[in-house]
Image (tube, rainbow, N blue to C red; front, side, top):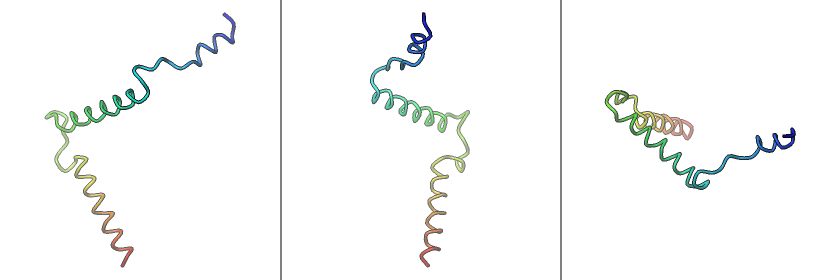
Length: 72
């Protein structure tokens, strides 16, 4: 085996599992499902004030007040 053929083997992309789009959708869906389980499982669930939805509400309210201050 020559060095060139070895490099060609190392550089080739691995085979795609299903298709590029389905792999992406499957990966994102798995991530959302894992996060949902993390948020709702009794042993790993954060306190209600530490959940993602509360953080988004807080950030949005902070953004709105900053926007109000800039327009005044």
